[in-house]
Image (cartoon, rainbow, N blue to C red; front, side, top):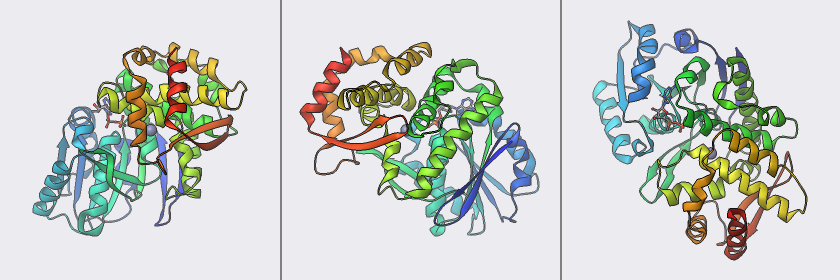
Amino acid sequence: MRTIDVQASSHDYSIHIGSGLRLALKSYISMDYSKILIMTDENVANIYLDDVLGQFSEKEILKVIIPAGESSKSIEIFYSTHTKAIEFGLDRSSLIIALGGGVVGDLAGFIASTYMRGIDYIQMPTTILAHDSSVGGKVAINHELGKNLIGSFYPPKLVLYDIDTLHTLPTREIRSGYAEIIKEAMLAKQSNLNEILSTTISDIPNEKLMQDLELGIKIKAAIVEEDEKERGTRKHLNLGHTLGHAIEAVLGYGKITHGEAVGIGLLFAVYVSEKYFSKKILFSQLLSWLKKNHYPLNIVNSLTPTALVDKMKTDKKNVHNKIHMVLLEAIGQPTVHSFEDNKILDYIQSFFD
Ligand code: ADP
Ligand code: ZN
């Protein structure tokens, strides 16, 4: 098992990564919570919910099982869960457990942050991508005008990451999570980037997966500890997301996973970096890794560059109407740059060629 300790301004917490941890949750809970609300989605519930519930035979537990997918991060499900929690008698000394991927984690975390002005919650991520959302305390739901627009900073009390649960993930979801691990490795000076780029991700042994997750989490934790509220260096975590978010938005959510879009976005960020700084950084290695792992690169043929630029302009991370992009001067040396729309359009057009 690996343990990473994270410091947040409100409290410190630990992230434990290991085999079979879902079956040991109870031994990690030190407080005597009055009641428990456990939130999960229908897919994860089918496979793992009983394993977790089995440990709490004597506690009163409210199960909230939401439909899988991004559309569950809605104000309606947020509100109806509050209603269920109030009726159930969840109080200030109760606990919320989030068992699932980023959708469950974001929604359950945001509910925990607002229920009676905030109660404790524990994250039990079941996707590789959720390693990212389980560090840094960002929790949110979506507004119909944009993703994650309603939210807060509210770190969990504990993250329990059972890597055995990752073996039932669909291949697309493995791909999705690994793009974010690659991103983290690109941001750090000392990292396992070359090693990851030499592997095929579909059949990664537990030990290697645990190592990659641990490193990704450590890199992200170091950044968010330095800049919890995203005033400076936390922006670097947006590497690959300028184009990635635009692709997701133009295609419509669900057509491509977040990480698949970020994978293409990372390649674009490296492409622009190599042009901008006139030197080779990583383009050809990253391209072959993405191809080898079947990232849907061909999808760019169905996208109109002007539509992507229009989406980029509405990104909440922009300032003064210019498009902000994180570039790499070298591996481990990210910098933020702003561009006029036309410049970005040129880059996208030549990147797609
Ligand atoms: P993320 O944002 O972390 O990618 P989501 O919450 O959107 O995660 O989950 C992605 C999809 O994978 C959902 O359909 C979810 O039900 C499913 N899923 C999550 N964890 C597992 C797992 N361990 N095994 C199988 N399917 C899973
Ligand atoms: Zn991301």
